[in-house]
Length: 401
Image 1: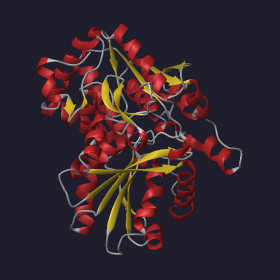
Image 2: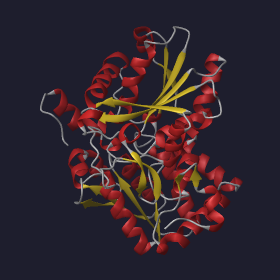
Image 3: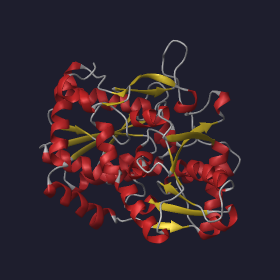
């Protein structure tokens, strides 16, 4: 069902976005949009949000000049260290905002979907902090390859529900979360983790993740007295990347690059590169680029990274792709794992496999840049959650997928 009336003007990015959702949820979405718009104009709400970002999450995160990488690859490479947030990734920025909104709306329960588990851990963390009942839906395949994060969610008091359908990964967990929300919306708030879903979710996630680029822009100006030449981030659904791009979108001299997961290679068909090989379609309440077969059925995505293993992308990314404001590229599993190893050994930082996709392309891009040029790469998360996959991969055993 497509949104009508008051919400229509705000729900689209060009032809993408919208509210393709059942009639039963339309009033819920309207209430959510109204509450969100009121909240972000309320100084007390914003004060509370920023209090928790600083005192609980540990912001601001550093903008670190990676000296050895810069020397090796030929330009200045700065890393925006979202891996240093409490819970180990950027996801907590958005969860704190949405859970404060849930509290403001009088909700007692929260639900979430998760792939790599970082959004699930962040939601479980926020639920414990604000004394809310929490259920997280996760594909059974992701439960297997992200066992550490499942344990963390359960330690934090959340109930983790395994979803066994389709590819047993993020898409299917999202389907189940939406079905549950449709039945329980009266007392339950659905915290979507990526910049996807029906309006106002893509807008909300961008609002709560833009802190990444607000800080990074100010930090870079202080260090270099100018804007960066390139800003780069990995793209699955697109939350860390839309947060990293947000404050630079109007700065036309800054090149923005989003890096998708090419899996075994785009030509192999085993990938998660919706921009490279998808076409517009409807999924999870939005119109955006999706991996589809000839009949319009959503195809299975593939990536070594559970967090990028999604067959679509957020609608604003689709718009930024079509308008050519952002260049979207893709990186294979092998390239990402090589980049992960390089960062470990050259800078003493173990990145998430998701973030390693952005690093891999950053190393390629840097070779074509001049020594006095600079890029910012969003290091969206840390890699301890991926320990089993990393060990399996480098032992030559393939990996959990």
